[in-house]
Amino acid sequence: MRPLFSERLVIRNWRDSDRAFFHRINSDEAVMAFFPFRRSRAETDRMLDRLVAHIETTGLGFFAVALGDSDRPIGFAGLCPQDVVPDLPAGAVEIGWRLAPEHWGRGYATEAARRLLAYGFDTHDLAEIVSFAVWNNTRSLAVMERLGMQPVAGGDFDHPRVPDSHPQLKRHVLYRLTRTAWRRGTDGRPGA
Image 1: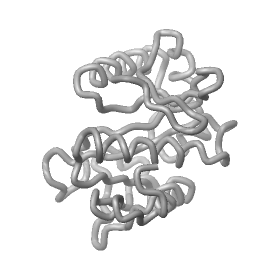
Image 2 (image 1 turned 135 degrees about the horizontal axis):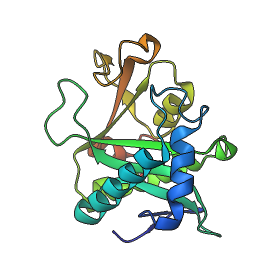
Image 3 (image 1 turned 90 degrees about the horizontal axis):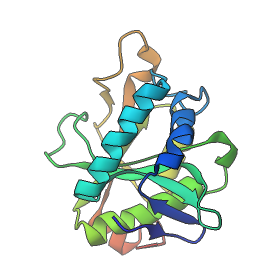
Image 4 (image 1 turned 90 degrees about the vertical axis):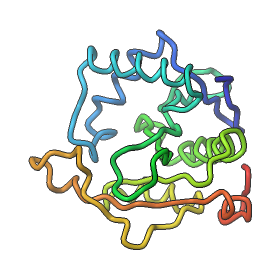
């Protein structure tokens, strides 16, 4: 995968030099507030190896998001085949993001996601892209809405990989954006 560029960001595959940062965002209490697990360094290293291989093979995955002026990673965002949401067709692709807290509130998640929507719809010819989050994760839901994604009526679900020991994290809401709606510019910025 060639790097993708937006106004302030570069979206690229991960590097060995990114490993400590990748562990940090996957073990940070604030970043992972809506996830039941914090990962050890060994776990994040294995996860990163799988991500790098998947990106190299398919051109999809959760990519490093870095500042364009320094190439310093600030989080990740990506398009990834998903298999946890009930009643979605095989091959459904989700868009997701995770940023270090010091980069929250600056529009980086929305900017990266807009670039990835263009990549998914134009390069990968996806018919739709979905996203989901814990029902009260207001920051992620706000990003979905800024992207022009719409909640799916009757699409709420209990995430099958969230253990019963974390009932407050089980209920998820599902959002969707079709290529047709994106091209119509539901968010006012088609192809941005």
